[in-house]
Length: 149
Figure 1 (cartoon, rainbow, N blue to C red):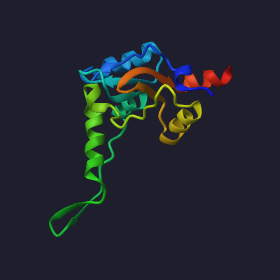
Figure 2: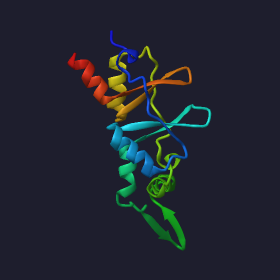
Figure 3: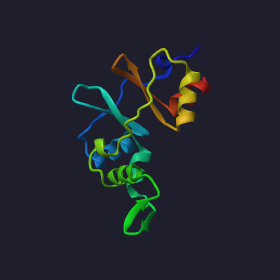
């Protein structure tokens, strides 16, 4: 059975929470990768920035629908969603635009579980953690490469 440790990239390119978005975009482009884990000062994974997070900065802003009822403004949509979207669009550093709910796996996670996570949650990169230590990363290309062998 193929496991994460068999297909992961061991030399992981990472960024800090304070890394400028422009620098993250340059890293993704130059290294031909789709995402980078974001590390806090303790070198723990606290997020991930993918190409889609950067693309989100240039999309059109969706303003929430509101209704004026007798002088009261009522939001028909989640104000938190709008706030999160706005913060991503104007973000200057990795911490502003990163996805905080990072899907991770262990070195022993099976290829099938990894593929299922990627498909169900529509993620392109999954960090591999041993305890809290980042030991690798798996991208869709790694899975495709392993299936080609």
